[in-house]
Length: 357
Image 1 (tube, rainbow, N blue to C red):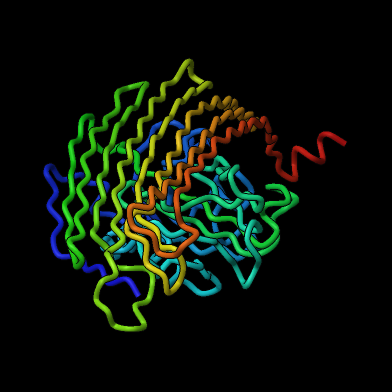
Image 2 (image 1 turned 180 degrees about the horizontal axis):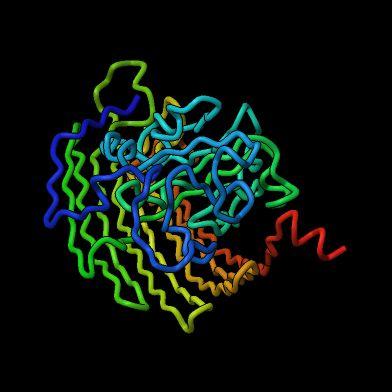
């Protein structure tokens, strides 16, 4: 079991947002909350249940909300370790060495039946048949809120949501015009994590950029059953950069753009009991997208587009040969996915419905 302990957190310049739980009023906004701006979360309001802001008591669905205060209390954990603590959630591989593939499961579902959303937009890994997304690409330092929707949601989100949806909402600052923040954490196995963020907002625009570095010497994923003491540690090194920009094009139209770059390198072993000192994998995930929302009285129309590019590069140069067959191996994979959707909502009450008839 991986042992990583949180020992220090230093904030360069404090932000009012970090002192509040996102299950309560966390962002002060003058315009109505729209699906194109999911960061403005009001008290007991969720956006995952039906893609529109709605009070959690009015959805009739089973939803678990992980707020910012709870995320900060678990700052020494990875995203998958945090999710694994909640009822009905099983993150297979979350307690293994850093860099291992993580499979998300809700209520015992198989791989590929849990849809992962990043700020409301589906993300996936085209390199695997199950279409499961690698949660190693998302660092917990950049997350403000998580909404877990349990139960079949295929009618709303498609076949990948057969057992549930996990919506990961990243941090956005609406409290200060300009905000600079940073954190530092360390733990066992020479584990260090540093992050730095700059964001702000004006009268009609908001922007932000953040960077996180996560490094650990780790331990051997292969079990040294003969107690030789010769198995090497499997290290992990990650870099994550995330940017966003949004503005109000008019009184009723808001436009937003976002991008993220995540890259990590991890050491692998030949098998559960067979060490390999020079087997590594480099995983890279690049995302870019945009959204536009139109809000006029009781009408809301939202359009979204997202592009995802995944790269996996495996290398075993076999300077150290764990078995007679491990001479040399090298493989790589590059996959691309596109996601686009447009949807709308017209809200009417009982009186307007009677008038319409």
